[in-house]
Image 1: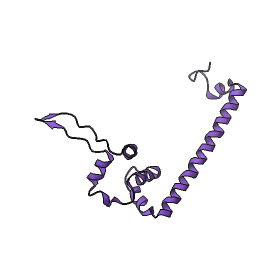
Image 2 (image 1 turned 120 degrees about the vertical axis):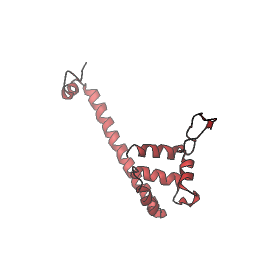
Image 3 (image 1 turned 30 degrees about the vertical axis):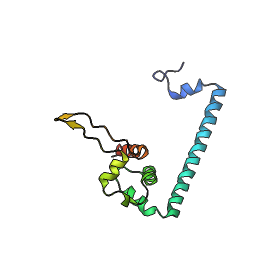
Amino acid sequence: MCSADRRSVRECVLEVSGQHRHMIHYSLEHLGFLEGQLLALDEEILREIENAGFRPALDLIKTVPGIQQDSTVSVLAEVGPDMNIFPSAGHLSSWAGLCPGNRQSAGKDKGGRITRGNRWLRTTVRIASLEI
């Protein structure tokens, strides 16, 4: 048995049998293939955004701190290019499920859960907030 605290990784790899090396090799080849497919899909999505004329909306969403390329596309897909359907930023954040509730009675806080909202948009914004 190979222990990381006692040997180097190179010594541990030498203990792997030939069949295991082949399986690792096949797995790494498959991983490379899948990564290539993801890159091709990302390029196709950006091409469709360009063809639909949504590039200005995409560029505007990119200005939000913490939002990267993948998050920008997700936000555009969930909200759409026309922000006029939301009267204010508060309405959009409420629709996304990012506004905490305010349940108080007689000065006692009864807990303010976050509204349900759009779970995909909420998750995207939460992950993006970790980048800030």
